[in-house]
Length: 370
Image (cartoon, rainbow, N blue to C red; front, side):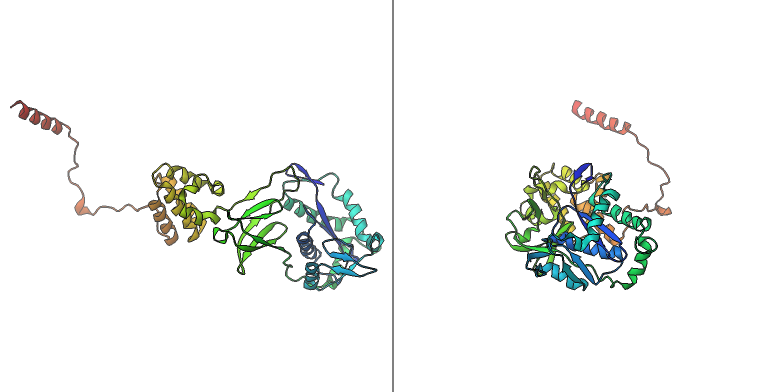
C-alpha cells in the first residue's frame, strides 16, 4: 500500500534477490499479471547488472499453469519463452515450503520496515519505481552482508563478474484477439480504446504491456495507447480516444466534428480554430480539411501554422496552408520590406484636401437649381 497522486493505492511488488551477494531490487505494479512479471525481470536484470544461471520461484499462477506431484510443473508457455530468452534455469519450490526460498521471504519482511514505513507519497507509479530503484541501491551500501566481509554492495561487485550478460529486453506482452466495434473501439478490462476508422468491424490483435497497449493488424502496429486501469467496480469505465483515428469519418460527415467526443481532446490551437470556423457557412468542412493536414505533414508543424494564423487574426484554410508550406520550405513567414527605387521617390507629397468634395457638391446643387 502506498499513496499515489494523493490516493491510497494497493500494489503488487516484485522482489528479486541474488543468493550470494543478497543484492535485491523491487518493482511495483497495479496488477499481478504475466506482462507485469516479464517487465519485472527486464528491470531486475538491468539493475542487478546480469542474469543468474538459475532462478527459484514459488508456484505463482503467472508462471505455473498446473502443479503436479513433486517437482512436476506445467509451466506457462509465455513464461517458458522468457526463460529461454534470458537462458537461465527456472526451479519451483514445493507447495507451502517457504523455507526453500527463505532469502526472498526475509527480504519481503525487511522491505516493509525499510521501504514502506512510512508510506511513500509519490505523484505516479513511475516515480515510485524510480525511488524504489534508487533506495535499493542505497541499502546495498548501507547494509552489511552478514556472512561475507563488507556490505551487500561490496559482495555484489564480486558476484556481478559471474553473471551472464543481459540481452535485449524480453518483449513481454500478452496478446488478445479482438474485433473492432462499429464505433472504432476495442474493449480491455472495462475500458475502451480507439482504433483507426479503416479497421472498424475487423479483427485485430491487442498486445498488452504493463504501461501501454499496442494494436496490430496485417502484421503492422496500427496504433498505441497508454494503458488505463479501473480496478474498482465503483469507478466508471474510461474511453481513450485518439482524434486522428476518426478523421476518415468526419471527411465523409463533417457535421460529426461539432459534438464528436474524440475531438474534445484536440490540442488547444485546433479547438480555438474550430470555434472560429464553425461560425461560418461551410466551416465544418474547412476545419476537417485543416485537421487532415496532419495525415500528410508533421502534426507539430501544422499546429505551429494554426497558431500563427490565429495570432495574425486570419484563421482561414488558405492562410494556414500558405504558412504550412512556408514552414516546410523554410521560407520567411513575414514579407520583407522592399525599398522603392530612387526614380519612384515622390518629389511632392500628396495632401488631403477635402474642400474639393465641397466643390463637387456645389456644382451638383447648381445643376438641380437650373
